[in-house]
Image 1: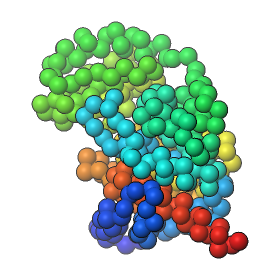
Image 2: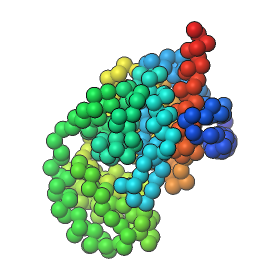
Image 3: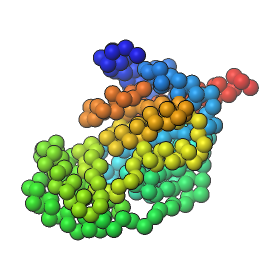
Length: 314
């Protein structure tokens, strides 16, 4: 596999090649490096995916992976090529699962998934899998919310005030979780670091945990994360190969889940939607692409490769 520095250099070259690819889903110019994992495990998984796409699950984070990161999460929308790319790929694979910390209906709205043609094989697993929206039926299923969320919601203003009431921080109520964002603070990283301890203590008092992200701290119920959601869905669908793409610390459990599935004989391809804010995923990934535009190019290239293989066999 080479030294870590050699692998990082190869990932950087691959990411740079991807950034030069046309991300429009109608383009036929996606370059070969888009489908060029830099690790043996990644190449094995890609071969398995292309050999048996009907038994492959494609898992995708939303923010930072399908949608660019923006200062106001309410204004986040999927990359313009995301839905066309998904409608091209979803019919070719066992399923596409968008796995997000957002409420499922919000991801559906911001992604533009509802009513889109060709997405019958797509599900949105919101709140780290606690909620599920099925594109084929348009139905949403969810258990009752954790009682600790209401308690945290009530006490949070006082905790933030006691921690210094950092200007520019703001709270997002996700229904089943509460998130504190520091991206718009005068000192985003300083506010993030200062609030992490007090928010962790608040969460623990009420049976919740803190999920750190890209300048956001989310207080949510334990026992659910993207790794659990992905593993359960892979088992439910009987998938024989899996791809997962993410960009943030909250995606690390999904990366760990893919590594565990590999040990069980299920090939897995790990994709990092590149970010200078979070390097941990790039260090673990088989393939690094250039943000949401690179993810769209990857999905397009996968759909095209599957179709080409099928037509060649016909």
